Length: 266
Ligand SMILES: [Fe+2]
Image (cartoon, rainbow, N blue to C red; front, side, top):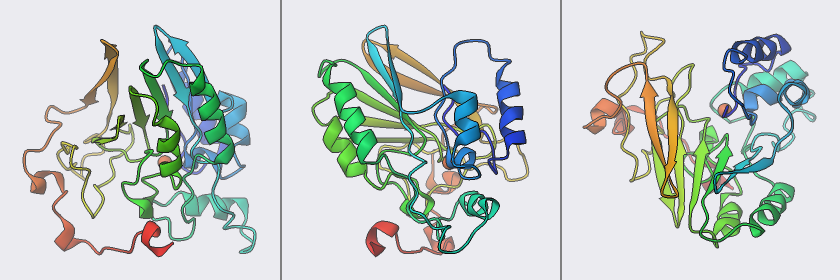
């Protein structure tokens, strides 16, 4: 499962290189896009290489769903007469001050999700892959989808839902109602934790050494036993979890400038 942001600037050369590297992984692969893959050509190259989202399949009693949470940005480029490269450059920054609240599931895809789940048992396991987390963690970095409340409305009847997401590049765990959310690591670099802290159920990771490009990165090994999905973080270092907030950076609020949240400004 590849969770998006294969490229940095959406360049076809980057995407081709990424696809080439991933050929070494010979098991069946499924893909969802990240914003870095999308906004140079609005997903054309990505979809040619890896196909369209959303998608679903059933495997051993689990319904797997892949969402596209990146393609529904409000149009911030036309009125500013941006070139496609400028549009992409704004997407390539973590701060979303120009791009706005771009992460969303969208009406059409919500309806698709509702239809797709309706043929599935209410207690049967469902795993939903999304690039952005399906809850409000930190909107200024689009660590959310702006319509997360509607998503949870659709998911409400189902008692065994696990959301696996990318984009945040860090150890993250949350539960809202019966929906569990697990954040994946990146193979490139970790992001710091949000200035406002992490969900209470997250056991945060040790803050990465900025001098070591391989620190704090890795992937996750997901297993499903007794209908429950468990995740093991696999990092290229021994200690994953922090015992104290100052080891994780989650208690850094005094050192960071807080900006108002999108949710509050809207
Ligand atoms: Fe991303």
